[in-house]
Length: 204
Image (cartoon, rainbow, N blue to C red):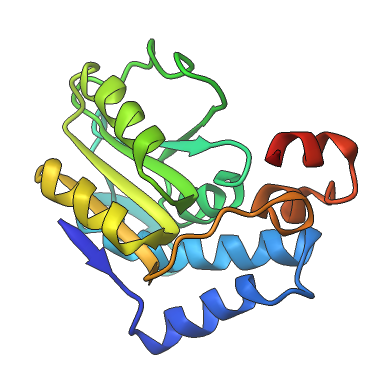
């Protein structure tokens, strides 16, 4: 299922700050975290929450927690998915954050029975995300969700059509594909490496 939050006013404001050319480094990271926190509300709907006794300022009271053993595993796809994932992680107490840089990084996660949330900043063709979804599915998770700041509409529609059991939660759906290069690459803007020669080679 594709959950498209493009038209929601709050999401429009949050995503707008990530698109401005003058926003980079820590400010851009914070903007990504804010979008992640907003996307967390859709992810939380897929989780199992149970009542639990807590110490309230007025004495014993009833609170909630994630059901033990069913905590979500949030996989941040590096580099650019890191801060979006941090925003989700920060919003779901008890969740787990792991980092994914290369193929095979997530092959041995103890994901059986847990919801797994794959997080990246952008989906362009969807090929790398499709590959990771297939790899994670082999771990027998309870369900798989994908959270992304912006995605290219044909790629998202193709993924959601091919994978009806996966939920795609998207801050903004774009009708044009765009691959950043050097100073326009999202990861380079986030980490302040836009002028590095390695960024130019990466985008070549």
